[in-house]
Length: 71
Image (cartoon, rainbow, N blue to C red):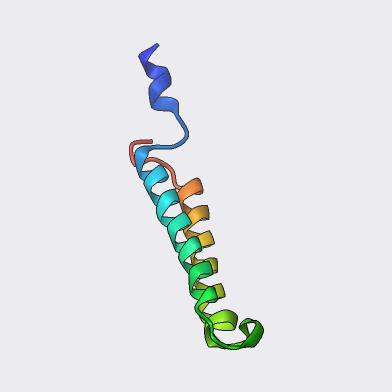
């Protein structure tokens, strides 16, 4: 019965990394709102913000596919 707990797919590290990825994604969207150009056509809205969002999604995928160190 105790062996079932060790077979969980995610560890605490996975969940923490997922929360970090979510924070990075939200930060990217927040940066896009700081763009002062009309309709978001400035550097923040077209380049910096979307790149940070993509980095956040990469962190999310890495957190999901990461295997625990002990397996």
